[in-house]
Image 1 (spheres, rainbow, N blue to C red):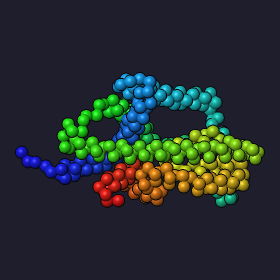
Image 2: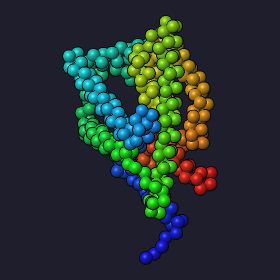
Image 3: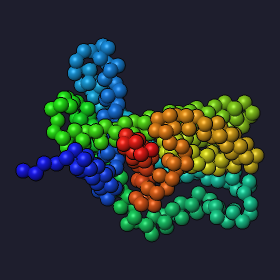
Image 4: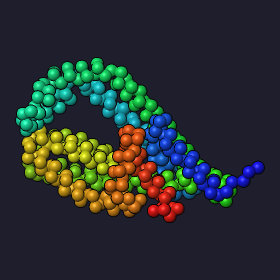
Length: 336
């Protein structure tokens, strides 16, 4: 029976993990991977806190039960909100569209004349345009619906797998087979990279949301400016802030457009404030993310650019995590 050196075993573990991470994209399993890693990490974070109250493995089971309750509650609220919105639209057809048109009409007076022709003249015209677009892209919309259902199912499966893995007992290192031990080391670095990137990005998103919320909900009202959709913009700022770099650009654009509905000076003021805040956040981000994985903003942006070119939108999400994992492996062998 042939014997394998430690070098060959480690090389095999690299190939297996790299192959698995790349197969995630064509198999469309990125939501499942991220959901599983997130649940796994949350259980591991909650367990030490609960062990102060409950001894033994029961604390880990309680952490899984609490996470399950929270996830089911959030999903129930999302479904309830969607149903409530549909019922509201059924009772008041076009109400949301009319609100949107009010913002458009306000913005119309602030835009140059050559842009005015690109805006819908009325809610009825906009509704007709949406209907025509949907008829032309019906097959694409059906595909989007299938993709959304696939993502939802894989998310749930990933959460369940993450919870199951978190409940498993970690075997003694000395009792593992060589390849199993090498794969465990690779997976440990991957989980660590995920934790560093995701939780650092959550901190950044919370900071960004706090600064933006103070501006939209406190400073502007004190100046006598009441921006439409303030609560929605604050929520979107947090959700988009979970995407490194590009999320802030999108949220800033949305806030500037809404500010333009009041006046061009409000839009300019909002944009100026956001630029100043993000310059401050740039140093905070470098400290938060750089302190975790020793990477600068341009490194993460370059990783996102390369992964987007190779794998599309999922690559934008996975790029920073994969890059952090790659850098962890390189640091471990002393190459960087």
